[in-house]
Length: 152
Image (tube, rainbow, N blue to C red):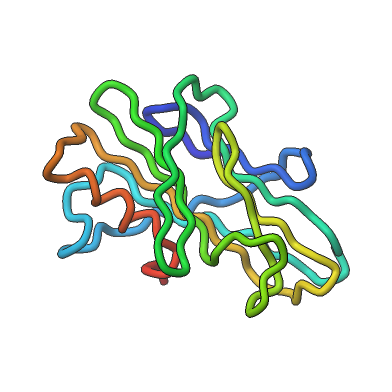
């Protein structure tokens, strides 16, 4: 689990909680220099697992999330008081992707990958980033900070 100012981040696979390691990352000097926390969570998916839903969420969150997608990025952000927290995943959510072999969905408390019978073995990445205080000037920093495409 990963403790954040908005609650504990947990990962579930087919609704069963799984252990994970959150890798602390440095801030990106140009894109997210002022964030307070920036983490990478990876799930090692094997083709033999077949169809799965891999969720990254804050089960105790009590605020509505806002969708903040981009090119090859799906992200959801939660605002509470002066805190903004974003969870991001790689890819673009569709019913059945033409160019990628997985999809996903937004949840009331996070975001998930959905893998298909045809999904190849790979690591699925979640980016988690938060900032406090969140202002109009630094609001986009968590969006960049939670983008797995900008992570090692």
